[in-house]
Amino acid sequence: MIAVIHRGQKFKETMEAFQQKRVEFIAQEIRNFDAETLYVFLEWIRGNGHKLDRITGMAV
Image (cartoon, rainbow, N blue to C red):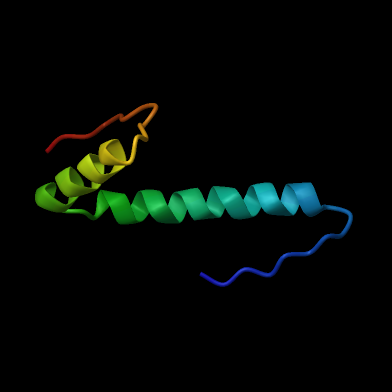
């Protein structure tokens, strides 16, 4: 992913739009995980002391 950051008049809006696109990209990648990869990913998140606030629509 290539990003160009501008600090112009609409900096905040531009950054919010970029973050939204980034989240959409990551979510799509996670949706493509097979069951084993998804399990390892979730264990990695837990192992690092992080948590997911909400998981919806997941069936493994």
